[in-house]
Image (cartoon, rainbow, N blue to C red; front, side, top):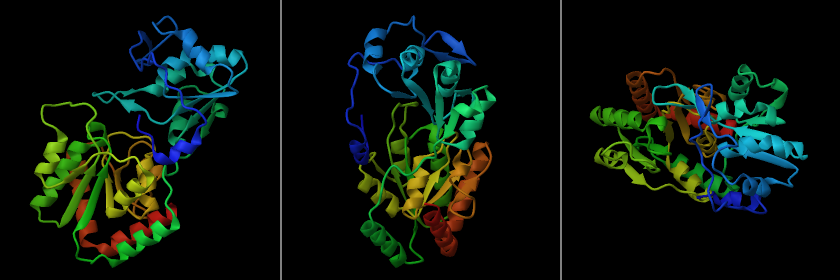
Length: 324
């Protein structure tokens, strides 16, 4: 488990359950989503024992904990369910943890979401509004004043005709729009737009014979493995003039807030609650629509506009710093 270094001080203890907890695979269905129930082959007494005795228990996307919440609640614990994203199947049907959580709504005292959009979404499926609290995402890193001053000075010293530095950070997978990134950068190369590109991340599951890592390198994109230190993340974001995120679906991405924190301009698709983090033309650029060809064309056009107009880039950077 890779944990950001700044999180280490947030917990007194971290326990790992040796037997492992199944993430999916239940035979029960609710709104099309499978979920695990008490008759599944899990050592329920061991899991309950690990969770008993706490005043407050927050379930963060752990499917196997839902069935225990009513019992824990009846013994005096307060129970909360934290949710951050509605996923999609390959055929674009909404799916994922929120549906299993809604099925167990009666077990929870409160629902916590990362966005107003998800708060309304849960209410639309019958969760009482009084039980739902939107807890907005903040950057998962902090940047000390000295480093901020160094970043600002470095950005000001860059020549106006230097190639635009384009950054992507995240998993190399279709949800994050890695295929859209590849196509847009190819298009920009063909049109002679001056830019440097860096992709930081990796492939969790190989979904096809050839890897995106190899494809990105073939078109001149530098590729680095994921980073987990707060200072490292800030340094990578400080390298980039813009952060591109043409995702197919999202919650409220921490990456956007972290980019704005150090003056890296987000260029992202308006999916999920991204528009709660970015105001188009003020602190970033939002790309509307669903069709891949349109997204790729609009992403390339946005990158070219910022490469040609450094005044616009500077205004969006200042807007992002103000938002942060």
